[in-house]
Amino acid sequence: MAIGDVLRATVFTNALRRAIPGSHITFAVGDYARIALLNNPDIDNVLPMGLLGTPRRYDLRGYLAFARTLQRQHYDVAFVLDRSPAMTLLPYLARIPYRIGLDSRHRGFSNTTRVQILPDENEISAYRRLAASVGIDASNSSCVFSPTPEDTSFALRLAEEFRPLESGHHILIAPGGGMNPGAVDLTKRWPAERYAALGDHLAKEFGGHVSLIGTASDANSVGTVKRAMTYPVTDLTGRTSFGQLGALMSQSQLVIGNDSAATHLSISVGTPTVTVFTSTAPWIYGSDEQHAASVSTGSPEEGLREIPTVEMVLATARQLLSGAN
Image (tube, rainbow, N blue to C red; front, side):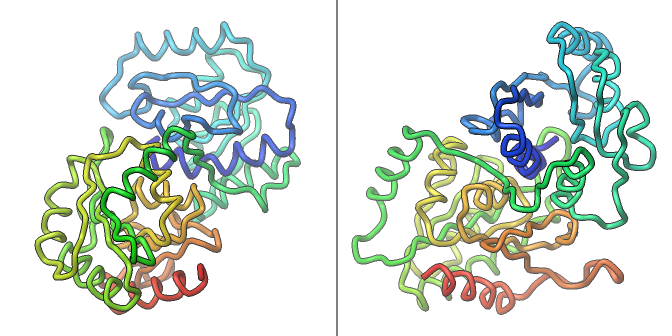
């Protein structure tokens, strides 16, 4: 599971913790996505899986060794949130008696309880139904990321370093994404020139300060936005850890970005977030939180059409900013 996938899956652990507060919850996750769970209040232990789950990055020896690791822990129940048959099989090999998980195209065959994924079903909705299959009400659960106090202090100092005192709104734009160890899909990126036009509109209309965020792999997109904007903009690419970025988002009034880890992180800390969908389906990967909005064209029946215009994204951003005031 990629970072965004793991953040979406926290809606399930949030529901599980609320329903069974005295339980001991362990979340097994690959090394790359482990940062999505750090300091999560709903999880007691994060079990590193190394490269397991990343296509073509692990071998049979490592796979069986991890199954033995699971078996030594003597877990009572395994909830399988991954659709991969290889990951679904691990709790079976570990002899965990109750294995409850999602089933896509019979890939959950080794689970004792299989929850069928519906056509074009939203992933968060699927996790809610998985919880419902064992009598847990997940209707009010949320995706969760909790920055540490140290992350929060760092983000406050960083904001003081660049943000003008007279600035009202702080708006973060994340023009990158689409890259992780398991896949590269740059079609998920809305054109950088459109982000630049959007940033100028928002700076002019709301009198706020715009900052660009991302990792080293996003540098080209961030650089293009920075050069094209006419209003002052701060480049924060690579200046924060994942937790520090989450804290900075929680102190900001709006985050706009592609279908990426950045927007899923923003939604998980409760910040008003606009996600621009270009090549992935919002009805599957979008959020149903009130502070989150997806912008796209098309529908499940006809699929995606042309990419959203600046005016479409701007109108959605206005609505979220107005609601936050």
